[in-house]
Length: 331
Image 1 (spheres, rainbow, N blue to C red):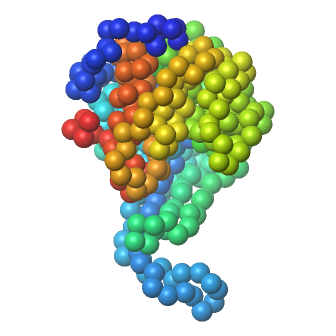
Image 2: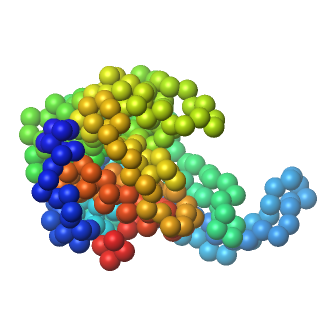
Image 3: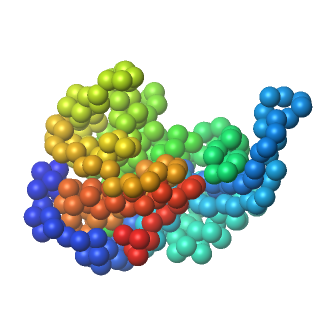
């Protein structure tokens, strides 16, 4: 489906969420990217440490959920897709915990994801009265999470051939690179729809994908435009620059409280107001957006209808604390 057809598809302009969910049920989505374990330490702080001007947190409980690319896969499964995930995960206690969580949520790991050569990425957030105090990251250098292009093509060939769409979830941890993207796009049997949630950085070429879903800050960086505080978002310039540099067939920029911007052929085509009623935590909202977008697009819906569906899904998850998913009932 090209960008114009996606924008102008008339078969679904008035589709309800229930109709989209019914049509998308069972779609086969392959997720590739940086999976991690999102760990939470919940507690309270009533005094400062005598050792340093920092709060003393009295721990009340701990929890963990799949994060990063794993959260994309879990969101897809929650919405009714058959999700498979390829991501570099360590053969360690955190990796075993993440693998079990994914299995419990209906996500299958592609063989080759687990390895002794790196630790599982873990982000630990310390929260007091639902406010984040700090975050602790445990991870190896990006090179530990990179898969050689030839090996990646061999690992993904069968899954890509059976998939209705591929999602590249980039958290700049090492699994997504120019070589990764080119290797996947060069697979002889793959779905037409390849979507990317990018993390802009020097030396990475995001060209050739069907759909890109940067947030406001990422879109400005991709466009090479300075983020000037207090200035309106330069929608036309951003869409034109991203199209000129990377030529995605479809572009969706998430703008937080300002909703979503849809780009078509290098122009700003439409803005969709936010569906969020109350915002507690934006962690993982981008994962929900790309999951819902890809699910609806893979089922044949147009970009406007898919974006409306994704916007409402994101409006649900930002009302929750921590990395979260959305269920069909909530939509």
